[in-house]
Image 1: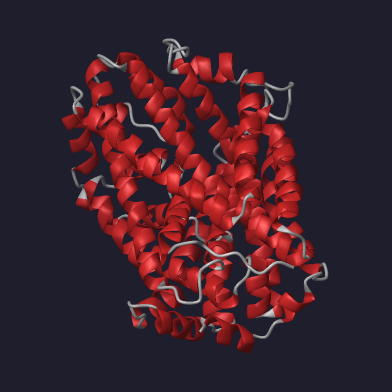
Image 2 (image 1 turned 45 degrees about the vertical axis):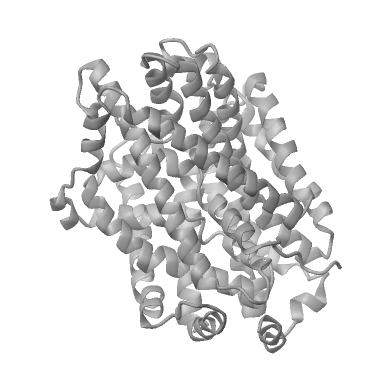
Length: 512
């Protein structure tokens, strides 16, 4: 088996980690979340969440990957033989996300092309769900949508080609292009946006603090949730990426740079998005609160409406916006797929090229489900359940296991302090041992309570009022399947027995 790959430079690792963290959620999730949870006042719990959960978990996962030198499953196995399944659980969550995340990038590619002639017309909602996606009823496939299938194939060929080239020549090289280009493109968007009529009103709505919101526990949960989902933590990515770091690496410094870099880009996104929402509110003669949206609706319905109403350079603005989605999506998708490429390579002692072909190829085939006329419904259900009951749940189990069951925080802190400029103290241990488990535990309780309450509030009792059968196999089975298959993967014998059985003492010596 070939020796483990390494990043070519520290900057290469930071760009790749930042590229993983900076994704579609930064652009379409953070602005709406901040606005709905106190505006400018939201930055208080947001920064506290960053310092007590986001960066501490980043440091923990960077240290785990660096110390044990393996993919997430191998790292957990070296930490404790009985915990390998948690690594595979995170990898399977990443696998599911990659299958539909790639489709959203395909949409963005097509919309960047549509921008040249504003093909979406005046009814942008009707165009997205009707003319473009040709949405079928929940549970129906309805055949492929060519304008989704073709760019989806392009996305997979591009991403798998990058991964096939390896860590240094593939992932690092791609992120050296994607991330600076993304920041440049979005800066152009923001500069244009803040010059629009009504932009000041949008920014006032975004930044004006409602400090009374800080007394609402749900605002704090939203802040921790935003940090948690934004930083690509708890589903194998950062453990995998840090396993490629050289022996001498400043772990804590890297974590702070990635954490604050991600948050800075989110703030930039908030400025850009609310500037154009302010413009839209003025054009329609309504309040900013009446045009705020998040998620797919913001990107593919509201933004095309805004682009239609721009006084000039509509096509260029539209192209730049959707290309920024493509760039943000590609850098994140590469990191997501790398989790199971590394896991398969470590477990079955195969080359990364074979792991890319088998793992990535299988994910590409599964993603075809989301390129059908019923794909949007499958995507919506899978995304909700795998994020709510996959990512957050993995994070809770991960932190509790490491802090309270295996009691590894002391060892990890010692390892990080030996090679880092910023030394960890009681803040880090208390954050991971107390604050994060409590917040994540309450978040999971709130999620289950919300879904239980929905039983009495909607016709079917399901998320988005979907039919029972569809939500069972399109939602619950997807989230539960990631856990079940993860446990099954841990039961397979390691083909790379030497790597799997390497002692912690040996790893500690090598890392030092």
